[in-house]
Length: 177
Image (tube, rainbow, N blue to C red):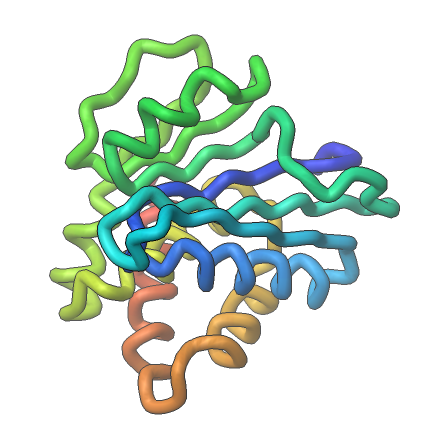
């Protein structure tokens, strides 16, 4: 990991990316790193554009805003189009395979995140957790143990098993890349 890693999780409101950002930051802290998380979403709670940003660092974080992400996760084409050009030159983009793969000079990981949530976990609503599993295994930014603990601590009571199934499906998907 570099001294400071900037991550942008993007999609539409209702996809749970704000929660995913909170979980990712918490996992980094559990790993003994520093982390800050911020979020932004349109006035429409569901369906509007949404993003969560996380900065993870081995040292103090002097500026808490993402300026040029190292990692972009986009679950909608709109989010990809909005944020793809702001990536660092050696950045990584993780997209759902339903999105047309852009021609960009960065590493692009295209995987069936939303389909995996539906088929392996039985609910599209856990695509955010599948995406966290993919991001964890594909980038090694946080440990699997810490992200699992953060998921279990943050998801709504009564949904732990569903979310654990989604996380493990994401780990498996990320390792297949």
